[in-house]
Amino acid sequence: MNTACDWPNAARVGPAAPNPLSEAEVTERVRASLASPLGYPSLLSATAPGDRLAVAIAENLPQAGPATLGAMLACFDAGVSPDSIALVGRAAAMERATLFLRSADEQLTETVEFVTHEPTDEESTAMLSVTAEGEPIRLNRVLFEADVVLSLGTTAGAGGNPRSDFLAGLYPGLADSQTLRQLELEDVEKASDHIHDAVWRLGLGLAVALLPGQGGGVGDIVAGSPDALRKEIRHRTRKAWSVDVEKPADLVVAELSGPGPLQTWQALAAALTAAERFAKPGAPVIARSQIDLPLGAALSRLVEDDSPERIERQLRKDRMPDSAAVLTLAQVLDRRPVFLESALQPQLAEALGFSPLADEYEVERLVGQHVSVVVLPDAQFVLPVVRR
Image (tube, rainbow, N blue to C red):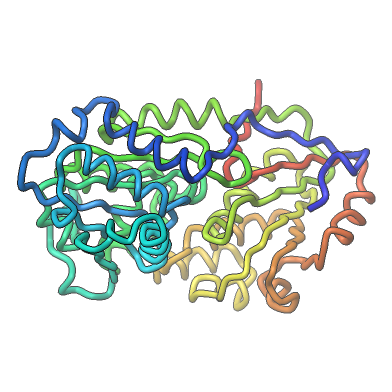
């Protein structure tokens, strides 16, 4: 991928984010964090002999294998036997974790229980409680029946979306399909309150959060109680990803970083939201990505309609997966031209409302047509700051 260094009219405005950790470092940092968590006793102090422990693995967890290994080693350090541990997650996360664990040590997986969560399987969930609004809280039954639940989550989902909450991999990630729909398009703060209320009712005391680093890797790891983590993550995220907006540009190039699991519609929506803050009103944005995802029902709305108001009404009625991201994309496309470099077929990108770019040469050609250009690396994580 070409960089701003090759474009004399472009300024690359990168945040002070940490360098990515290696697989071995992720494993050791997760293990060490559970020995001295924030606002909570160590895993050794929090468990008793014979306790059944469930580890909830977020669907979008980066380095899922090394992180899960670190959690398991911490469990062993605390005296929890392998046959008392259940790993619970959605199919993609479980596949990544299982392959890594088996390659690391086949014996680790012989007695540990692997539970793949399917939101549409009502028999695999149990009603925990109800929300303040009277809505049922249903979670995977294994979590409900465990003595101790440990959450492995991340904030790398997408900024400005409920799924970016570090506990969202547990709830609603391991809830039923109805709960997943209810949180779609809900205000981010309100959705976050629902998430933390649900995990409080579950009795979750200890969680691990993997925070993004440069290039979409894992840059930081912290463990603790949900309340302590909420405050600490906010502090670390602002320190790592805040970028001052000095002067709006004629063109903004937003680069999405990270492997396939991070190349999502939510990430694209977050990247474009950040890019808009650096662009002049109506100025174009180039999104450089590797997105190659099938269209869900929500994305199809962009093909069928170009009115953000009508799209929002329909999405709020249907509450489908990706609804929040689709609404953001529709609003951005209504305000300015968006050029998209991706792995999508050009006809599909164009049908969604984007102007497709085939390669970096087309990107370079567009960059050369503008006087001032800002390039945002890791754009889906950037937090623009406008100084008054």
